[in-house]
Amino acid sequence: MTRVDQFESVFKAASKEVFQYAEVPIRKVLVVTDVERARAEELAGRIRGFLEALGGVEWVVVAGGDFHGVEALLELVERESPNLICTYRHLHSEAWRWPHALGEELAVLTQVTRHPVLVVPHPDSGRALDHALQNTDIVMAVTDHLTGDDRLINHALRFVRRGGRLLLTHIEDERTFERYMEVISKIPSIDTDTAREMIHDRLLREPRDFIASCRAVLEERKTPIEIEEIVTMGRRLRDYRELIESREVDLVVFNTKDEDQLAMHGMAYPLAVELRQIPLLML
Image (cartoon, rainbow, N blue to C red; front, top):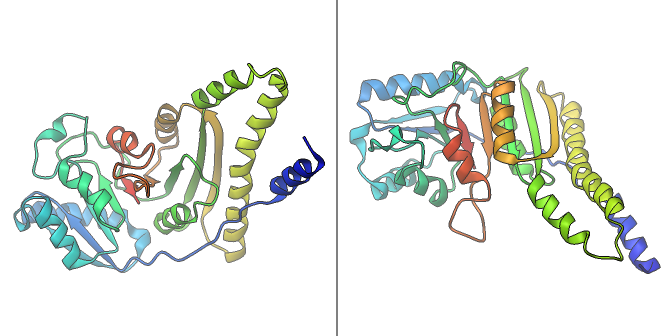
């Protein structure tokens, strides 16, 4: 390594991304259901209580007879132009009985519209955890690259109830790390043990530094929300499930859109399919 390379590495290591706080305006919430009006209003009432942190917003409730099909749903969303859509899996379908998909209306809704979508447990499924839809005391932000994801964190903060806790999680995929280490072990000029230690440390240090900047910004603003750091290496889907159960998480927030593809971003689809017991905010 040349002295120029060494200097560049030191410079890059010293450079740290800092969290940028921004208000997330939510003035209108659209609740989309496939049930009769009375049940739709009842479910909307539960969601309204759950989202107490949003404060005074306009609520529009859609019952099952108000639209039919994906095109009509998208037209309805375009007409109402909400800041948040609340719904559940398998609208106008009995497929909610099988935990293998989202249903065509929700799948299109999360990818085509620009609005965040709050997905609650299906009202007929009986899968919801006891604490689901009670409050947002504990919110978890989930991503495969936390550093610099200001939008994700700002949205998660918007939904945490006053005095609540935001879990900022970053889980490096252990299998991917081991695959790269296996390749590195076959390069004679690289000391494998040193590389393992230094790469592992760098992968986890950057999200920890970013979380520290989040905590500093919120402390400066005197925001009444506690930040908890969860940065580790493991198997993402399994570890997320265990964290959600052990911490009794009320709401999970994650990204779904990917600029380079039509399909859902990264871990979004398996998370959306498998985490059916609590509400999910899909950005």
